[in-house]
Every structure is written in structure tokens, then in C-alpha cells.
Length: 42
Image (cartoon, rainbow, N blue to C red; front, side, top):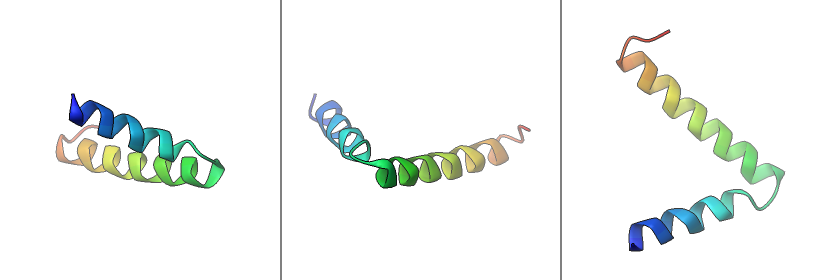
């Protein structure tokens, strides 16, 4: 339950303003690209 609350708070912080939303998208896109590269997906 603590992990869920922590993640919820972090995601809420990322949605504060356009700058933090943009940062979240950049981080998520980079992580997704690495994941797809490791799995050899297009």
C-alpha cells in the first residue's frame, strides 16, 4: 500500500504544470525506447 501511495504522489507531482508533464513524457519515452531496444521491437 505504501508503494501505491508513493507512486500516486509522484505522478501527481508530475502533473503540476506543463514543464513537469513534459519532463515526465521525456523520461517515459526514453525508458520505453530502451525497453523496446532490449526486446528488439520496432
